[in-house]
Image 1: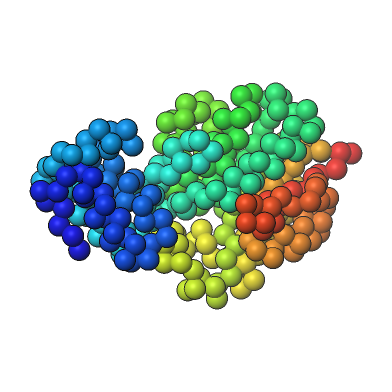
Image 2 (image 1 turned 180 degrees about the horizontal axis):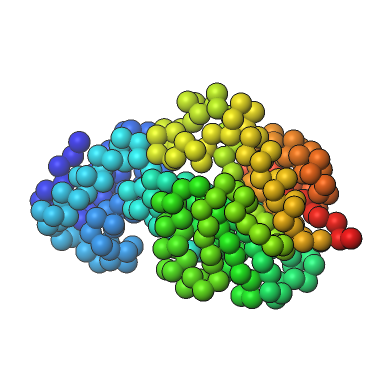
Length: 293
């Protein structure tokens, strides 16, 4: 591994890029730029301005450490300790997933359905089951100024992370976090319930990319033998808590949307619209509607 001591900022960034390319890291240039900037406390403009100065010994040591961790398969977001989701910078912890762009499809579909019903400005009551970092809930609250939200998780560490993220986003006054299994600790009726539960089949966990399998919490990945265990629990819970006319929107794994719709139908919900595909064309967000009486 390259020693970054006595190198200029630009030379160090290029050397790090070369290491990452040799290791077949797909986003080698981007990762090298982000990690170099993080090690030096510089944004892109700062990196350009400081290109010809030499790294300090402390900066070199930090960049060495970041390089070692990335080459060992640790995701950039874990090294940074945060990940942007829906324009919000979210802190991470070992108990939370790294939020992924695919999950923004859940937010998009929920807002699309609320917009179609003319409900964006209503005082909505929202629940996010298995909230993790709070990503989905906080994204929705950022778009729904009159809404109040409740995030649940069985992990106290995840809930503390979500609370910190709510505070950073200025949403603490509208977000409440509760320790429970999905919706088991919730009461009252909700206008929208969302969830990104674990949906990977147990037998597929070992074959996941190392960045996921070795760094995301197993409990947030493992969906049981067929990947649907969490849905069997949370969908009936959600159906009981939805107000008449309210929505449930969940993230789905590949080839799972039809099975999830069947579970929603069995719980008394009606498919609200066709599943919404992510950028790869995979049906990623599935919505169920509780019919008004």
